[in-house]
Image 1: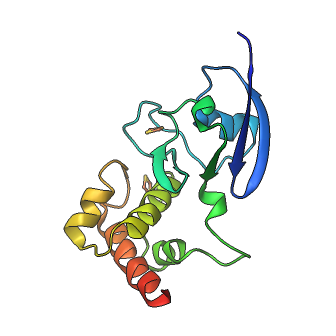
Image 2 (image 1 turned 90 degrees about the vertical axis):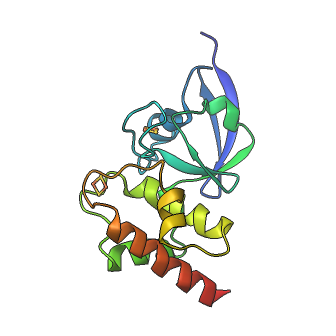
Image 3 (image 1 turned 45 degrees about the vertical axis):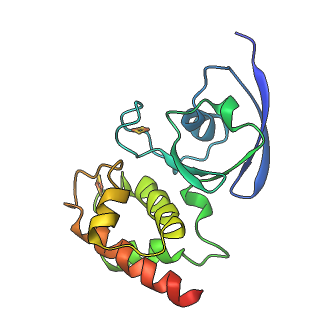
Length: 159
Ligand code: FES
Ligand code: FES
C-alpha cells in the first residue's frame, strides 16, 4: 500500500509523517510519533480511552484515519499542562481522586476539558451525559463528576 504524507500539529509542534491510508490516528500518534499518553482500549469507538482534541473538539482517535487529521491541530494528554503547571482539570482529578488505575484518565481529561470549554454551565446530570462515551472500570464515576465540577468552577474563576 502506498504511504501518504501528512502534516499534523500535535501539542503545538508541527509533525510530518508518512502513513498507510488505513492508519488510525490513535496508532499514528502512538506508533509513528511515540506520543503514548493516548490509550487504546476497544478500538471501536466505545470506550473513549483514545480521546484527543482535534481542532479543539474531543474525538475518539480510533475512529479517525490519520489522513483525516492532515493539516489539523491535535492535543493529547501530554499537551494539557503548560510550562510544567497542570491544567485545572488535571489538578481537580488529582485532588478529587478522579482516577484509580488511570487507563481511562487521558480520555476523561480530554473529554472533560472540551465539555467545560463548550458548555457554560454544567450540573451533575450534564456532566454525566457529557462523559457518557468514556468508560471507567474503576471509579464508579462519582469522583470524576466531582472533579469536573471543581475544574469548571476554577476555570470560571480564571476567566
Ligand atoms: Fe477508541 Fe475505545 S479505543 S473508543
Ligand atoms: Fe481505571 Fe478509569 S481509573 S478505568
